[in-house]
Image (cartoon, rainbow, N blue to C red; front, top):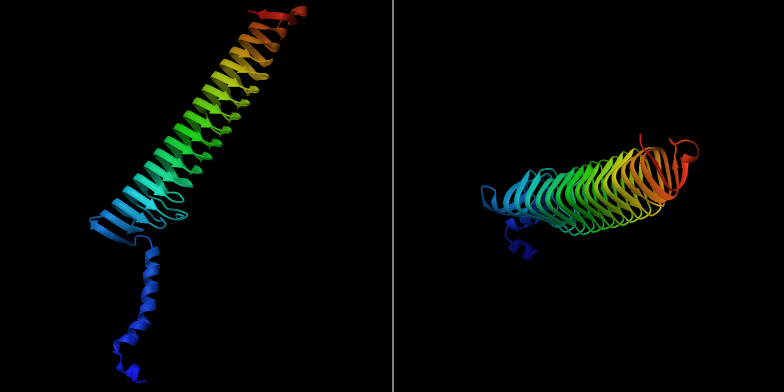
Length: 302
């Protein structure tokens, strides 16, 4: 009792207030816009979840951003919806996330743009975008976007786009797109598009397009187009299309409607031949009598 009487009267009050003050401080640190700022007019060094800043910004977990210009470093998982934009360098231990990422975006695990990423985007595992990707995009496992990819896109396993792939697209296993694929596309196994595949396309196993293959198309096993093939197409096993305008080279060339050009293979099967077929056996459905089935060479010109 003597010891308690000797203490200052304000000390017990301070002991009671400190836990509440500490708790409020911790909560404030998690609120959007709470940060320790060393600078003037939102320029300088910011530590915490500042929503607008220019310079150096370090934060545990980003959420409710407006605009960050400069270097942004995030140590932990970002919020479900971050928004805003980061212009400059965005680095995340787990992965940077924002509405728009512009500049250099680096994530040890992933990079997660909500609307778009433009510039250089590199992720240790994968780049996953709810919008478009512009520039150089590299995911050691894969690159996935709900929009389009424009530029150079490299996926260690796969590249998946909903809006199309334009430029250079390289995938260790497969490239799949709901939109058109245009440019130079290489895949260890296959390239598949619900639209057209144009340019130079090389696949270890197969090329598949619902609407058309255009340019130079080479597949280890087969090349298939739901509508047409324009240019040079080559496959070890089979080329299959409704219309061929150009040159087709495969063990079995199957042209379901019309060929304008040249097919070379073991068996060439063409319903309406406007050109030349060279192979062991050549079928031209618009020829008459014995001329429909010819060894070595078959031809028809109107």
